[in-house]
Length: 310
Length: 310
Image (cartoon, each protein chain N blue to C red):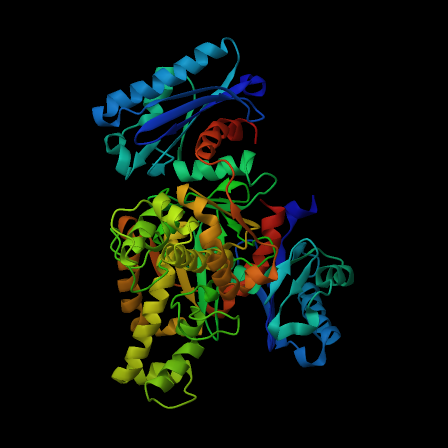
């Protein structure tokens, strides 16, 4: 069978601004990488053309090597049955369009769609901090807070592809309002955006980026340090719930705001220890993710291998 | 093979006070049921003898019919590799003893151990409110709050058999203290015990059982009704987190305190709607469990069928 002989797969990580695509071999070595604008502002056809062009360039360069398939990670809720994405804020023009069918037809290859946070979790499992593990949860701390969950080696997708919405766990019942309608969502108390808002409340000035607040903390500013401490407390409350619920061996923190680890981790672990006897009783690891922005690309590239070689 | 021809299985639900064992056929019909004291106070040998005797009585009655195996549900964390139970508060004498090996040897049959809440979730999946579903979470509201999670048809056990500790999700960060070391655990705000404590705080008197508070609420006592409203709010916060995390099609509430459904459900659903856009955007069902105390017995009885007929 062709699948047995497949020599590379293609992973594509579709963001609101840039897309990155790579030809990747069975061991996870990147054979070739392409990065280019997503063309989101120009609409659906432009995005699909950009994706197809990147993939075709990679295929041409691989010559007669056999392609296992194409995995695509993108933001939003994936309807795996229909091969469409729903509620993709940054790529609204793609919503409910049969992306998988269209690209599969254009490219004459099998295409698999996956939520970007799930793909990132898969990438960490394959080649990053989760190597050798079958169960992990990846929490991404960026503008918002996202999550990807792998249980028993399988991505936990949920009934409508909406599993892993960790950013909307309530950590402060009467806390900051969230666009989702709730108050006290984790992502309103522990994302880069939340760090910025808390810095303003601490009198550090409006509009500081998470990175700028980090720099202040690193320079010894106690108010900036207090902001990350509050972030860590909220993370600890959510993490304790997740440890109690899943009893996984490994929980990873990724995304840009995870770079402030040294400032939020002590408070996070203090809450986690206090709020989870499972954490205290077991060898649960809570660590930084390793692959950064590459995690989603690697995870996307692994999707075809998972189907053909399970 | 013998498994193909198996005509019944035996389920045993081991509680701190009573054990119940049943011979059950492939369709879930109870062929015979035995209920007897667990003999917990008399120590390990007495418990094991009580279990073995009940099982042998059932086997004798089934004559030459072929036994698929024996499933046992019991409180505590199950180490599936070793066939032992850990941290079983009500059955401390069984902790770390090779129950599976010992009973399997005595009875010359295959024995499977499972946590009682997981077994109950399995029972509801097989014959109760979860028929036809592959993913569900069962929350049991009793003296404490427990949970059993079935994802993709498989019990979610976690690395140390400790998954599903839903009762220790933080719902009120600075709330009531819990024996686990945390404050504001769900089970300190939404169990029968919590209902009793809140009733005291509302001036209804000390030592009322959950049932008595329910009777007051049913008689129109506004303070008792307010207690269940508070219980419902805490349940809603936890349930919203669980819906956001799993996006399962079905969440069930069982246990004695679930009988107060009419008094806590309105507040629970109000919180759930507010705190979970996944709930608002999908057809998520949150319902009462159907099998009551039989759920764990049925689930235990299904364990051997799951192994031999998957």
